[in-house]
Amino acid sequence: MPDLPTPDAPLRIGTRGSPLALAQAHETRARLMAAFDLPEAAFAIEVIKTTGDRVLDRPLKEIGGKGLFTREIEEALAAGVIDIAVHSMKDMPTLQPEGLVIDCYLPREDVRDAFVTLDGKTLADLPAGSVVGSSSLRRRAQLALRRPDLKLVEFRGNVQTRMKKLGDGVADATFLAMAGLNRLDMTEVPRHPTDPADMLPACAQGCIGIERRAADDNAAEMLSAIHHAPTGRRLDCEREFLKTLDGSCETPIAGLAELDGDTLRFRGEILRPDGSDVLTVEGDCPVTEGADLGCRLAQDLLGRAPRGFFDWRN
Image 1 (spheres, one colour):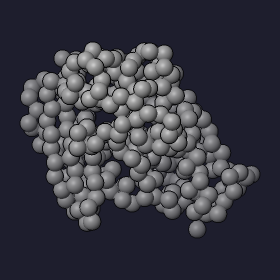
Image 2 (image 1 turned 180 degrees about the vertical axis):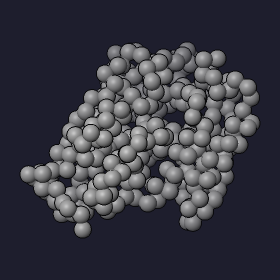
Image 3 (image 1 turned 30 degrees about the vertical axis):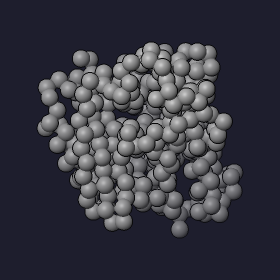
């Protein structure tokens, strides 16, 4: 049994400050409370502002990519300012800072993207020349592949900010993650979920990961009580696929691992940023071999990609 936190010595949970990030931190706290029969006062949620939260007027790839949403939180974790950190896994770099580890995942939410317009139009209903806002390199490339007649604009900010931008007429439509809408209970938002068979999600979309110091055995024991092993199996594959592809490039990448009994099935794709080309891959393996499958399929794509495919500046 681990040493449990108390109101006088609470477990400090680090998180970003957006409504969605706070909802994820609250879910983590609730699961730990239930697992160990602890009061809410035994936990302290610490909001940490990241570079990605502060710089909203430039595309992510211009200011550093995924680490912009995690760096300050991980620095606080390494320094002992917080005890654990709660992350949206699709925002996480595939390499951990030395001394930190993620080996706890909560049950995965809906993996699908949601196509959102204020009047409820579907993507097929959207007239040619309509403006779609997104900051996601993957979503922009997938949309350019499917609807090259639409105009794409940069669209940064949390869910509430992006909905306000739609209301202000900055764009006619956008994409949001179904997982975020569900976790925020935003049932009022008109949305059309996209079938993963038509539009693969980002690797690790819908997943919450909880990071700790590698040497903190007490935190490890507490987090093991709420770890969802099936989600971990899926992410082993998806994150290894991403890691193998993304070591030195900024390419639109999508991938989804699903479990079918003792078999793990994976589909993935890479696209040119302008949507002019896409390469796909799929395969299956025993559930315990997902990381090897993700690596192998990524290497297959690397071998098939034509010269220049991984240069986003083209």
